[in-house]
Amino acid sequence: MIAGVFLFFLLELGFICYLGKKIKMKVVPVSCFAYVLCTFGAFADSFDGDMFGGTVNLNQHSSVAEHVYFKPDVVHVNGSLRLVNYGQVDTTFVVCDSCELQIKNYGNFTANFQLRDNAQVVQMVNSVDELNPVVSDVKYTLFLDGVQGADLADCLDDVDKIVLKNSSIDIDGVEFSDKLSVELRGDVILNIDDVSGLGNGPIMQNLSGDGRVTLNFENTDSMYLYQGYVNGDDFYITRVRETDYVKVLQNQVGAFLNELRKANPNDVLLKQLDLATDIDDVYKIASKSVRLNPKGLLRSVRAVKVFDNFELGNKKGLGIKTDLVLSDDFYAYSIRLDNAIQIGQLDAGVGIYLGNVDYKTDIDQFDGIYYGLNLFADYLMKNNFFVRGLADFARFDFDMGKVFYKNKVIDSPYILSINGDLDFGYRYKLSDSLLIKPFVGMDLVADSVLDENNFDVRGRIGIDIGYKHQMLMGMQYSYFAGINVNSENEFVAQVCAGVWSTNDNVGADVGIAVSEMFDVYSYRFFVETRIVF
Image (cartoon, rainbow, N blue to C red; front, side, top):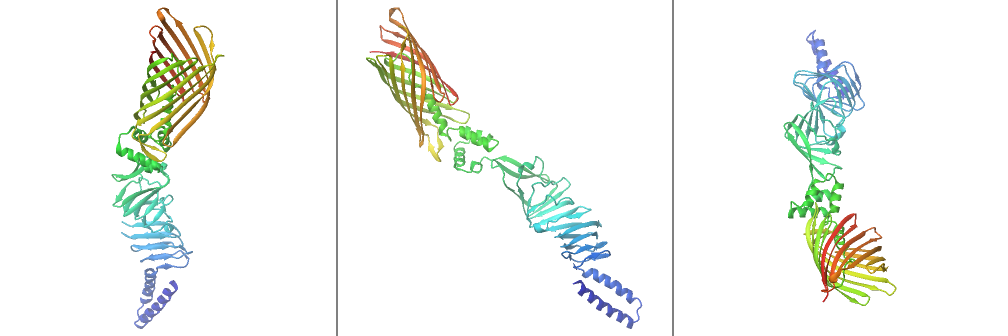
């Protein structure tokens, strides 16, 4: 292109010089030379070959071709125009008053700028391929228009203003200093992968424009919602705890918790979950709730029923018993009615009971009722060996609202519980008053809530001790103690004291028992009265 323009210049120069000779103008040759220089500057819109030294005038949009080394001594920018560089630029630019030099850089661009009054330099970028830094001795403006996914981490060294128009940028590792002005136009998206680098201060300062900012986070903690806001001329990103548990957990449990919030915004479980700082805490809290984990509910049932094995005391006649069970998470109380008979060496009986459970933790609060039936028999052989067995059947109905078990929402579940004991032992009668009964055996525990079934058979070993003292006037005092430990290292220990009137065939027992299971201690207190008709 330059060769063609140059040929045109020569022809035009020849014509002018010929005309000047005809009219005998001595000044024409000088004028012709000046005209050529001016014309060359005005029409130079593409530099296709290397250029070293000299002066270049830019009067319109120009370009430097690929692989071209453009290094004149000075380039005069004589108006507001655009320079597109595909090669390598290394020179000094003098930009005229109130002029704007726009640079699109696809190659390498190093420059010194002499800016006249109100002159400025703007690097225009329309795609990430054009995001090549301009190495400059003055600060310039970086203008991104329609750029998607731009990484500015290494592009702001010589920039004092950035204009973002309908663009998305990655701001990980980008430091928007307080000396950098930011102008927003249109829709601007900020892509953030690592939220740990956000800090507590403003993300952008010296903000202007009427653009709309959207935050796009990748690989962020679902526990938190990040929101941007403007305070003065600064842009901040704040972290807000996410309470939409569909977003947090991304499963059906989250949907259940959201529905729970609609029904009861002040639910204690939700309050605890909302205080969790990470996803592990959320799962830990959820696992403790009996509304999400039926195992916790089953454990409370077992803690109540563990005391319904072989009880010590005077087992004869009709009995009425009240008891109280205390544990970390609940207390239960019941009234029991049973009848025991003696047929030779066989003691047997049947009992029914009705009770209430009050369950309260920092995440669950509810109550329930339970009722059941038990059967027991104890047979003493002639050689002082004995065998005994017990079977207990119970149902627990809980008024706890909706729960989420096995990917299903259930309203107020119930639990069926079966307990069984079978022991074999020897009766040592050390005196008329003192009796020792060591034994070995097994216990069976089965319970079910919906299709969550548990069945355990454990071996056990234990000893019972009894002492009776006959007083005058037909009064008999008795004291009993016993302990048994199963193969799961769970134990039950109990003591009781009683009084019996042989004249009236009435009596009463009081006692206390303690158990340890699931690393939790439970306690039972009871009072029982009996009569033989």
